[in-house]
Length: 270
Image 1 (cartoon, rainbow, N blue to C red):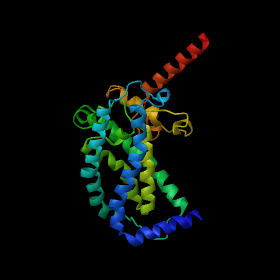
Image 2 (spheres, rainbow, N blue to C red):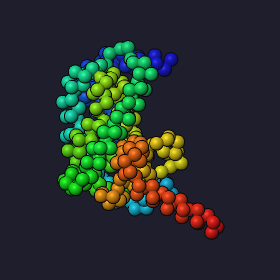
Image 3 (cartoon, rainbow, N blue to C red):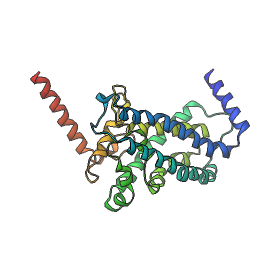
């Protein structure tokens, strides 16, 4: 039943819009909708002091500093993201992107998305680590770290050069496999939701890192933002194993161990 509804909806889209329109403007509209609807809640949580018990850092951004982020994001998305989507369409088409029916089987969609997550995390780790070298950090990556206390929307607040540089990690998987457009959209939605959650600044009881093994999440990435760039570590985008393998999570692990020791000591006193 659900598959029939999806196929009917997809039939409507490909009947009323060209593949170019769907792959460019359609992708942009979907991205903006998911990004802002998922990212704005943490902005308002911070602005109005909501769920403060779950806020990772006690510091908060001012309203004007939050607004500055939003307006610059709109500019970056219109001037960088949208043109890149338009220009890259021929490449994706050459690599096998399609939008026609039939839709791919669920097993194919899930296996491709799992591959994208693993590959993206690997490529992102090394690209992000490179951005923390002295010259690249000073001239490029420092823009993203202007927000030492992140909230959801800061996930895509970055220098245009970084948007292109690390954006490669997100598109390399789909470019290699030539997916169906529906698979590409689902991958983009999941990736946006993941990076917004990692930058949310809140760690809730229902946060994914409490249930998914090897998933970093907001607590893992928040540490990266609040520590000096030469010592931050935690470079991975989604998972934690790359940082563990290469020893770039030692500072975070040490901090967590100290926190647990402090909690145990407090419990004994009680």
